[in-house]
Length: 79
Image (cartoon, rainbow, N blue to C red; front, side, top):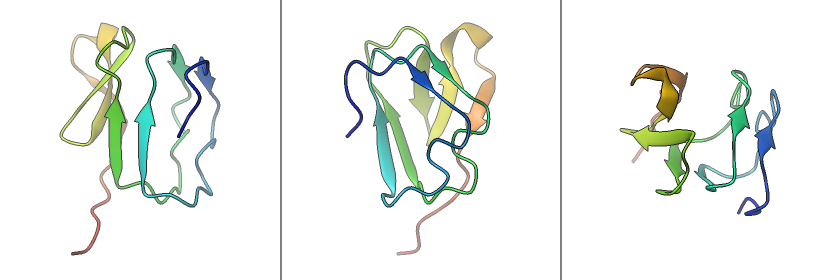
């Protein structure tokens, strides 16, 4: 799991990750557009108390973007 003290997720941070799900803690303030590029992530969730991001239908959404999707995970796990 990601540490609760994490504030910034840099580009390609999860490009070669060994896990298929991730939970973004409430402390995260910034996520690079290509943080999930080429990753194996299938499920993305966000802490309910994160003021900067939330997730809906496996999409990571920047809260202050008035609902537009900034980061999107369209992969679907077989089975």
